[in-house]
Length: 243
Image (cartoon, rainbow, N blue to C red; front, side, top):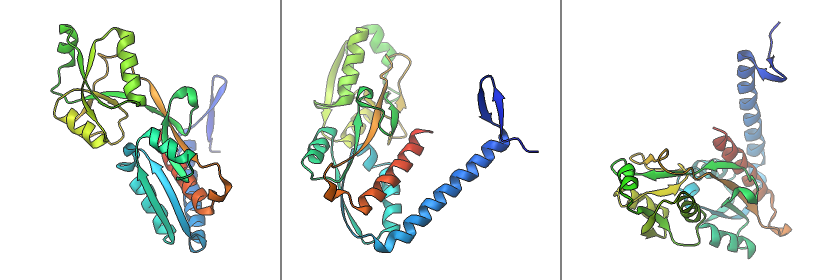
């Protein structure tokens, strides 16, 4: 008789056979969800106003939106890629149906936690900067910015001098400046260019931010299309965050 789980201490854990079965079960559930979405495709119409951070707009969301559009071609998606503050304001003003946002851990776990990292070009000698006592050169968004605030708080708590040497209004500008070796930044690894590296170990751990999917509170915005896109985004993002 096959054993799907075994006992370890006071807990039950999956056996190798159980893990294989779980993998098949997840795939069957995903196929079931995709089938249901496909069967509903002809009935879904309308417009969805979606807000998202640049981090997601350039890396994770294209695949999610492409999948939704293939199954629901009659739904028009109007996307707004912006920073956290303007997106929250637009959601409060009911200019958005859904918004994918960052939030601090004390605001709730959201869909899951995404670790932050100090990120720099490999040629930037952080050890030498720390030994010399020179201020760490930071590449940041302007205030208010959750990641900027986290970076400054971490360095101040550790007594490490810092100086913001480059300010950008776009994530692409942040990455370009870090790639040029102007300084280091604090971001998640989502969309991190391949020639940059996490620069942890020498600097205080910056913790995590939560990913949150918010919907406008007005019921007239709660269409079937909005609900389905929200479900698809939730499934995909939780799967990515659980890696």
